Image: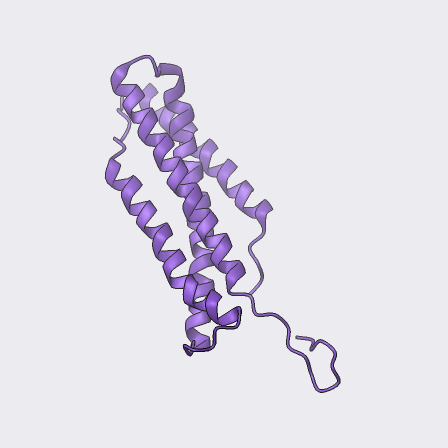
Length: 156
């Protein structure tokens, strides 16, 4: 599995933010109201970020040399896949909530809209934590190259 590329994540954020912002503008221009953001979303995304860290920690410990607990190779591979998924999910969510935030900024002087703006920013922050958790745990899952019999690094 190849490491997640930052450029792809940035492109995902920009495209999703533009689509979300445009969609909200079109929706409200036609008389619709924006879907309401909830505090439960902040909590759920935050718990996902913590879960990714929690599942990645034993793999990190094993890779760093703590061999007291056996780590199954399939578990480590699944953890790496989860981390990669979390980074992409975080990028998608950052883009979505960035579109929301940009949509609500011009009307932030209205109290009800300001509360939605605050929720959008909170969602944006925990989404960034999910992305960061994914990237960090993915890095933790990298296994250093092993030495072969001749004392040189093995090629994979």
